[in-house]
Length: 276
Image (cartoon, rainbow, N blue to C red; front, side, top):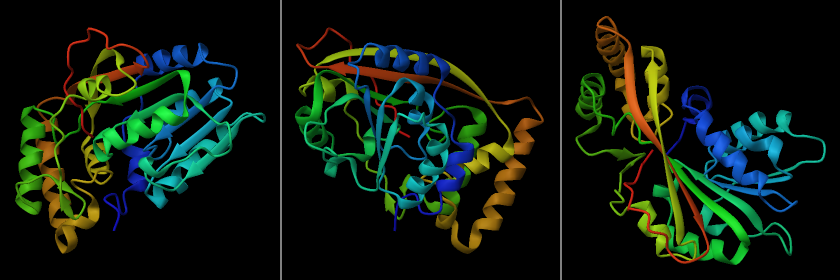
């Protein structure tokens, strides 16, 4: 079973989008690309990154291992495409992706909230063979409500743990943490010239949005609760509504963008991984 079984419709509706500043940054990068303007989005989910960048690209290849997510991405992206733009959706893991036709090379590679699911050294070696010489690899993320630290997110995490166990879940398995900063991983690859941009954000959540978001994740997907799902949802709703009576449900985060290019390693301080 997929780690995100049953999550696709919640993912499309409740996952926070790409921050406007990050979109501007990526659009600026796309504007410098060769006329082909080919995007490869790995771990696309429901297509949030291509949806934000579609008007600046001629070819989009979106890769996602969950078939239901691919279907949602198709519904999101097809209506947005210009007549001269091409969209290809690939239902597979990022590491197994190969060029769609001879001579194809990606100008911009984006990985948003998904790098921690991937075999990073294997993937970066593969990217070296089909990313354009001037291409950019953008690794992005901002943590999750599991990693957030505030009174209401701490209480919510404890509620999830009472139902699913202390260890963070990844579908039917335990989540395997990646403790090595992504900037270091990139710096050890061909794409060793790394620039980091941190975008501070404040999100305001409603109880309904929080619960919908939880069902979009691998650590609190709806099916994990089994017959206790109604019990969990009632308890989560009560908890969140109680906190909301004291003020908005605020989440303070930093959205991290790592822009990696070929070349000697830049003197960028190591950055902490942001896992979804």
